[in-house]
Length: 282
Image (cartoon, rainbow, N blue to C red):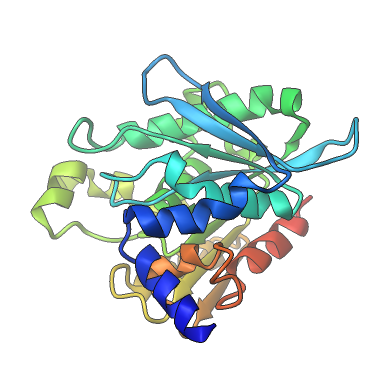
């Protein structure tokens, strides 16, 4: 069994490997989660989201989590992350996974604007799907954690949609690049010019009034440094905001989100920790 899990893990860690993703998403095809696919949250072709609705009693309303996937602001799609939607649904959350625009078609902050538009759509429409808009949470992995954190911290994004950050009860980020200066040419192109960099750093907008934040990081992460978590947590504490952190000793960058899959669920308690944190604010 151990050799099988190692093999499955290796397939998933290939990123977009079709076999790995099919295995990761296999349970969602047979679960009792109801999936509503390709719901438009805007007018552009990529502005679509999927809604994962757990089995629930008639008339019951459930908390909602909007999840943003990673991919260096360049890759990924909501279809790759059915295993995340189903995992949250099995914890009795209505999960929403939204697509967003990416480089090179767009540069910062367009993908954050897309994310805010998706969150606003969910807030205004999720009651139709048995969701409680007053129990709305954000989560994300890697670049998706960056997008979600900016939506939660920089009030301008939701203000464009006629809302404010108070509609977000809490945020949980996995391996997010919250405070960094682009070094690679691609990232310079996405976020530049340099005078624009403070606008993409979540720490710029921390004032103590942002939603409670849970910041999670794997100690074997070689892609996003621990300093991103530490700098954001320190700034929140300085401003007397609410933040919790946790480090997983044997987990790398991809391992944070792959811990949501059926074959790696026991490797790290990421999903359980996020749900426990959200539960404090329901």
